[in-house]
Length: 596
Image (cartoon, rainbow, N blue to C red; front, side, top):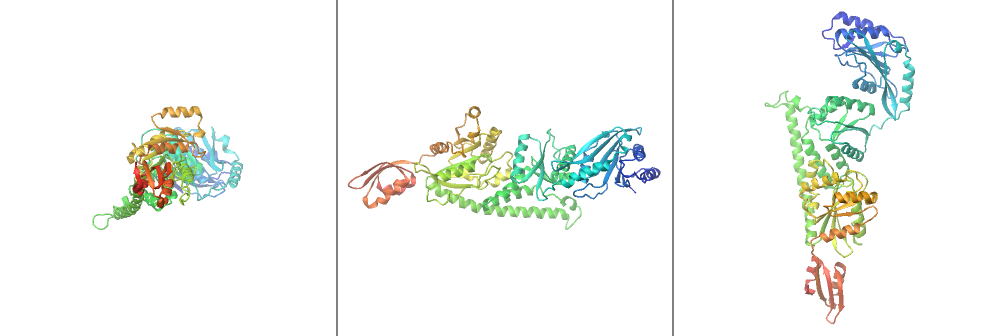
């Protein structure tokens, strides 16, 4: 029985092909010259590719006719630690005997005993033979390729020894964890951006098995990358054992669907990967709502599936069933977005109340901002542990780890500096290049701590190869938040990893910033950083002279605890104190004031 594209082929040719393939190949022989020559002759005659599948007993178990460039393969049972027991011989009527990407992909995916391509020129002459076998290297199923010039040199090749060698390697191979994701990364912008995508994948516990950089600016509307690159990607996926493809850019719903159909595995883009990380890291109710809100906005523009085709089926009125389903999905997402926004607004009001209390106290507000994974949380933990009041029960550390987006939740802690001045320190979510707009929008309520801050400390990783690009990314996000004009100090963190020569070069390029070298890990210059920040805070401190009656010595103690006492003298009528105090102390002790 001949399968495939038999339209227009005369019956006598099909019968001739079928009779030729009824011949058996002697067990242990690689191929039979007469069979290969005959299918090559017929292939040129009909100008179509012919493929035959042969089992280890030498019997042809499938014959398939394709077009002039490809033929379909039979259904083959894939065995876990063995080859399939089938070798495929097929013709290339274009004369090129080189195995194609599709050939190699089929060899690995079906774990064939061998894949053989016969190049045939228009005269029916065999131009060469391409042969490939599977192999196992670094626990990954790959391939090795050979070329032969004539059939005689390989007809008696004892390929069963080769098969036994391959199957031995397959038995020793460790099977990949089915629950783990192995990804191929694809991008256009630059290798630096793809390296960052790899870090994002690592943060999501996804192992990267290969990275592909697509050159050129032409975006394919159907696949984002060219069709040739899609075929290459399918081949890489098979060779590397990947079960996930991640694109460095945002894809449309149609592109994701088309790519998944063509490659045969899950496809996601940079935005959905970042959303996945955010969903895993969100700890507070507010952060979880914000992530869910961003995810819903992302999904709302990618509602695809059966809707388009079902809309033609017909239904109530003039609308199709598919269209109705899509409308229901959209309505449900809109309702969820509305409900989440309302809940977020309630949390925002609570945050606003807390902020108002700090504002009334005249307390300065300093926000730590910066690219993700530059050490903001480490710096915050150091400041809080060093300067938090002894009686404070809010000194717990925030999660700080060498990974992207270790911290999602904004935390605000009040610290008391050596001059008794209290300031609020806010740690914020890290920024990143190509940070999805929906995420910036969703996290705006959290980032309001940045908007209402008096001073921004822009923390950077001075040791990063992409330092200047990362600074620009952060400035772009701050601009989007309307905070680009706030007083800012640029803190070059991890300075212990940078040579003096390199640091001078960095400072020269960033000379228009107010800069300080710090090391949160080694507690280097952190006190100086705080001094610089406090010096930039709005001056609410006042120098005041008090006379405190001996009957109210508790007021004297209060001033000592909450102000900076410069002079103290015990007089007949009471205790004379000259102190520098903030607005809160000033208002509370106003009745004892004699001058300011």
